[in-house]
Image 1 (cartoon, rainbow, N blue to C red):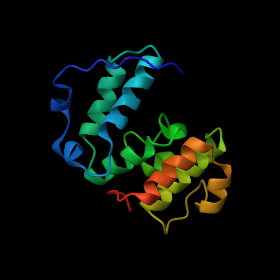
Image 2: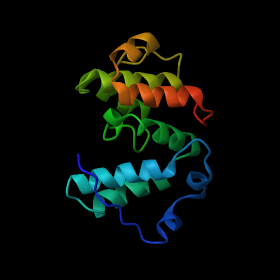
Image 3: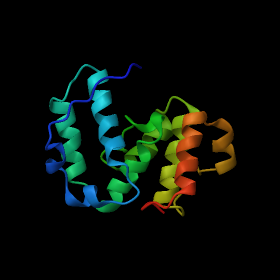
Image 4: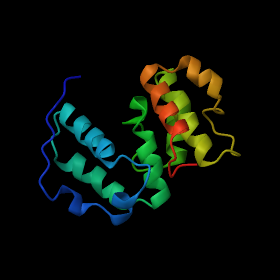
Length: 154
């Protein structure tokens, strides 16, 4: 994928909820740039798709926003159903039935395990050793970044 320029108006942050702007452990620019990048990459620009995703983010609860922030750090989950807006049941079904690679399945298991460790998810339980052996470098890095930094997620 090529690098596409990101053009934001000076007041682009004014439309975001305060809880998103104040959240520690969430790289807001990373989240928004990924949403915007994928909209531009698909040729959609910042039209209805981007506006819908931003509306979804505005309506999310604080904990949901934290999971969105962590979820988009795993490239295989950026467009996965259930990540934005955060819906763990939808993510579980997608990971169990439609995820096309190990990166996505292990990343989904990781998020779902953080969300509710005692639940038996359809996509299976998260196994850190198996995930690290199967993830590519980018996904391992996202996990290790989470593991070595204080975040608002678990």
